[in-house]
Length: 230
Image (cartoon, rainbow, N blue to C red; front, side):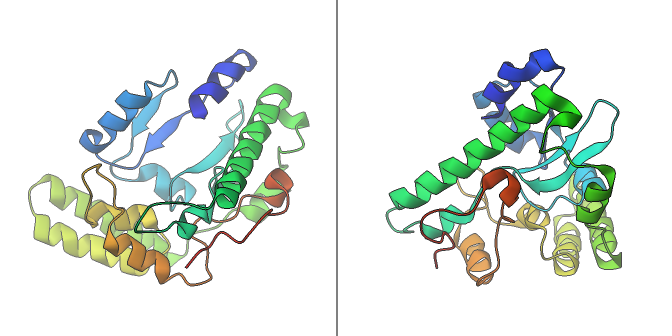
């Protein structure tokens, strides 16, 4: 998705900058398998997440050539379709897959339109619109990032128990941050936090979204069945 988008639009002074909120050792196999031509950074201390209030992956921020935010952090073409998956067979209804692919393609096309047309793109927001959409972190979120950084500091020095306590404090203060939660969550053989504890946390959302819905101005109205699953 991102490689093809970058390759098709690099002639328009467009670049994709990927940031993995993980350790280099965990991110390296995924980056190596993708072999991207665009820059990939490792943000193990979540500085970018702190600056832009990123809580999940994939999220994206559009920044123009003058360094101005054109679209604040938003879900980058993903949906909650995975919640409709049969957890025994891993099967996902075809209608849900089709809707997920439709939304992803719509997001890619919106980014490409901005790459080609810049501020003239209908998807590029003005300063007032950006400010209206920006989420400003409150004191609890700011404190959560402080605990997270302290946890990383302790973990890198071998104090695993103390680090786990700091990560728990961070998640308690900022429960919307799945990125923080993944830091100390159990990982499967692929290095993903996708086990029972993940699904328990997803189920606890109830009717709330895991991925904030993609802007209807980009994705259009939802089509087909609801994707939230159980």
